[in-house]
Figure 1: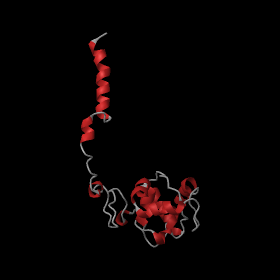
Figure 2 (figure 1 turned 60 degrees about the vertical axis):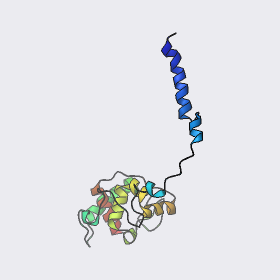
Figure 3 (figure 1 turned 135 degrees about the horizontal axis):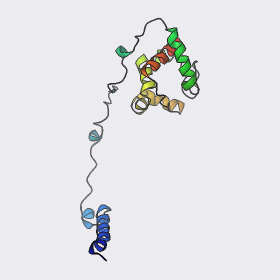
Figure 4 (figure 1 turned 90 degrees about the horizontal axis):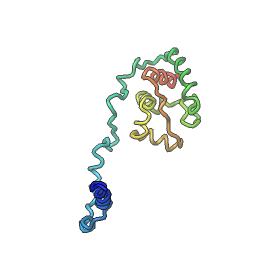
Length: 163
């Protein structure tokens, strides 16, 4: 039997004892108090009601084409195809909740950029946006990312505006 094969198991046992707290040194030292909450909140957005959105999020000035009073029927028609393929199972075109909220009147409750970001950055919104989190509480369901392009999200916004 080689010396290395005899020492190897002993080294593993010693390492496990130290890692798992088998030594007395760990028992003798008092536990370190928990760090104040402020050190763990540094990575989160400010809690003053303001949310720091990632740079790729849609802002009002980035909505393309820009919003006008007129509804673009071609965009609405394109959006209806997307709605029937990806959204219809959970959303309706009325105010009634299906699984998620109905879309009629949503444009009066939410900013257009918020609606587009919910479609484009669903997971981030669910994790960080209080209004999106409130919707999850109200509906008992989380929206799944539909992997829409920005153009498709803009068309969906036009459909919602048309209701």
